[in-house]
Every structure is written in C-alpha cells, then in structure tokens.
Amino acid sequence: MNQAPPAVTAETLPKAYADLACLYEITRELASSADLHSCLEKVLAILARDKNLGNGAVTIINPITGQIETEVAHGITVEARRRGTYRIGEGITGRVVASGAPIVVPQINKEPLFLNRTSARGKESADLSFICVPIRRGPDTIGALSVDREYREGMDFDQDLRFLTIISGLIAQTVKRIQLVNQEQLRLEQENSKLRRELSGKYRVSSIISKSSRMLEVLEMIHRVAASNATVLLRGESGTGKTMVAKAVHHNSKRAAGPFITVNCSALPESLLESELFGHERGAFTGAHETRKGRFELAEGGTLFLDEIGELSTAVQIKLLSVVQDREFQRVGGTRPMKCDVRLITATNKDLEKAVAEGSFREDLYYRLNVFPIYLPPLRERRTDILLLAEFFLEKFAEENGKDIRRISTPAIDLLTQYHWPGNVRELQNCMERAVLICDEETVKSYHLPPTLQSSDSQRRISPSSFTAAVEGFERELIVDALKKTGGNQTKAASLLETSLRIINYKIKKYQIDPRLYRVEGA
Image 1 (cartoon, one colour):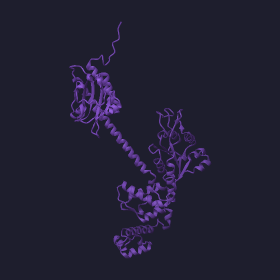
Image 2 (cartoon, helix red, strand yellow):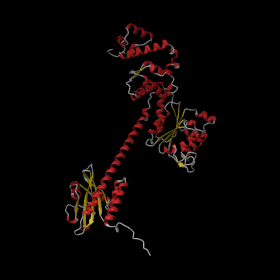
Image 3 (tube, helix red, strand yellow):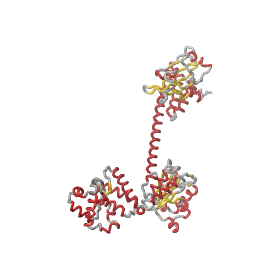
Image 4 (cartoon, helix red, strand yellow):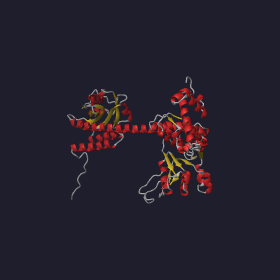
C-alpha cells in the first residue's frame, strides 16, 4: 500500500531551498504592498517564523531630526518602539548607520555598546546574538535592519549576514518605491487642491461681473442659498449666465469638494435622456452591453445641474419627481432602488407656469423644483454692466490671442450700449471675441463690431446703410480718438490726423464733439 509523500515545509527543505522559499515570500510582500509600515512588519514576522531571527527591527534616519528612529519592531510594544531612537554613531545601530558596514555581536550581555533601549530582551540576553546590517540606497545609508539569533558557541554568522544583506537591499528598493508613490500622490493631491481653488475662484460670487442693482439682488440670493441643500430653479432668457450662477452656487456650498455634473435636457432625445440621468443595467435595451452609471450616481455628494428643464418629456418628469421626493431612483432595466445624495439645480428659459397650465409640465414637479427660484435679468435690463463685461471680454480675448488691444473707442461703446442684445451676455462675449480677432490696432473701433450692431434698430435714426452716414461715423470716431490721445488739444489732434486745425474745428462743431471732455492738465 503506497503512502502519501510527506508535506513539504520550510523545516523539511534543505537549508538553501528553505532560504529561497523565505526570500520569495519576503519579496512578494515587499513588492505587493503600498504601506511601508505594514509590509516591514510582515517581513520581520517571516524572519522570526522561518529563520528563527527574533526581535527584528527596521530603523530609518528621520530626514528632519537627523536621528535614527525605529520604524518597525517585531514583538515590541509601540511605547518601547518610541524609545528606540539613536543618534548616528550611537550604540551598535548608530555605528552601522554611520559606517555603512554590518556588525555582529556574538553575545549581547558582553557588549557594552549594546544599548537595548527598547528593553525587548531580559535575562535571556546572555543567550542571544545580535546581527545588524545597513539599509543602503545608492551610496547613502538610510537605516538599518537588525535581528537576534540564539547564541551557540563557535557559530558562523556569514550566511545570516549574506541573507540579511539581500533583505536590506529589497527593503531599500521598497522604501524608494513607496516614497516615490507617496510623493506622486501628494503632488496629485496638491494639484487637485490647486485646481479646486482655481475653480472656486473662477466661480466665486465676487467674480460675477456686475454693478447693476438687478444683479446685486441675484448675488445676494446666491449667498443665501449656497450653504443650504435647497433645490434651486434658475429662470431667465438664454445667454444670461444661468450655468455660471449654478457653478457659483456649487463652489460656494458645502459640496464644493464634490462633483458638479451638467445635463442639457434639450440636447438629448427622450430615449437617451432617461438612461443618461439614471443609468442602465446590462441588457436593458438593444446596445446596452454593460451596466452604466447615470448622472445622478456620478454627482453623488455633489451637485447635478439640469439645464433646459422645461424640455423634459412627461415620462422623464415622473421619474425625476420620484428622485426629488425620495432621493431614490432605479436604473433603466433595473429593479433595485438606489439612494442618492445630490444637490439639484435646474434652469429654464421657458414660462413654466404657462406650461403647467397647458398640461405639458407636471404641477407637482414644478412645486418641487421651485423651492428657491432665482431670476436672471436680461442684459438690456442691466445696461450699466455692458461696458464692464465688454472690457472684461476684451482683456480676456486679447490675452488669449496675443494682441495688444487696450481700449474700446467711444463710438464703439455707443453701439454696444444702444444695442438691445437679444442673445444677452453670450452674444456680447461672441461679439467681443470677433472684434479682437479682426482688430489690428490698439483700440476696438465701431467697424470691428458685427454688422448686427451697426444696423440695429437703435441706430437706424442715423441711417447706417447710407454711405454718407458711414463716412461721418468714421470721421467722428477718428477725431474723438485723436482728442483722447492728445488730451483734448485740437492743434495736436489736427497734426496727428495730418489735417489742418480749421478742418478739425469745423468737424468738431459738425459732430457736436466737446474737446473739454478729453482735456488733461498740461495738454
């Protein structure tokens, strides 16, 4: 009857194979861990178990204090480990670190340099040998690995020294790897923090450019609602800055560290919008090859901004109502309810009250969303902001395109302030970007502005389509610009324009220009 072969263990293997098995296990622990303290503890435990090398300790030089501190010690209390601190050159460990060479103490109790600061060894120290090898990284010694071995008369320590030197080399590589990973993680955290600060600055309430009383009311509303979890409904025409206000609310709230997720409800068909908002399970419909998270899940802990909320179909409105009421939803094709912690901000340019009356928008959903409404006035109702915004966009686009454009001419300002801006702030932004792109001077002139401004209703009284009117407008702009540059001095202005003082004076009277407006002392 055949008997099963005996189990193979570290004890039954020849010593060389046992060393390889132990080395393999230690290498695996060091290579797979991202926590230095944890993996070193496991290494010392393996040495104690498989090699009978007890009281193992790893000491590392503290780069701040310059002292050698016990990072990990096997079988020693935390308090005892704290006592294991040495100056370089002090005791056996200190000498190993200072010299970069290993030291063997055959009998601990006969070596006066052995300090035993951790008090890990009692009366049995007479039967213990102490082996300490340096941990080197390149030419530098960064610490030491030390163990105890049961003392026997005439024992040879060479094999232990070779084995522990290999282990110390692996530890040095692990320390370097983990430190690099930690440094990269710290760099990414700092970069992430910097980006969040920049975002917070970009969308902080004070960065919304305005001095009109209407917008100051909006800023006050943002301040009041930001710190709460209340659902916000932004009302206003297209292009009034609803998205920017939504971001300002988020970045000034307690959820600023969380995600800000945007969904344009009018940009997706109903069949895709439901899946986009709530996600779907694998096989929920044709093409759903894998489970996919929806925007509610992606916005967990942060803010979900639903733009053009008035465009939602009745079916999606019903599902959205359930989420708003219970903070709970199901993925498309799913049966398991999912909780969500999301701050909801919605926006629309539609008359929701009219939509409710007509039955195209659910009344119960309207009241759930209309908890804290904020109305954004159109640009034509905040004309004092037009020049402020125009100058902001001028500076922004001039810098982006590497152009030295410093100001907007008076006639161009007149066009900007008299235009009715049906596209609001977005149209003004596009207008100034176009002006910067085609302007090759230091000043944006009226002819750099789009034709829609030149032929607006407010300008028809001067018949801009007339050749004579266009020439007169150009002449007036040149004269005003020259007077500004010369501090209202008509003689210098005439010289700058290479014409006579008589002609300049004639044109000034014709166009009702007041040179005194541009005078400065000494001009």
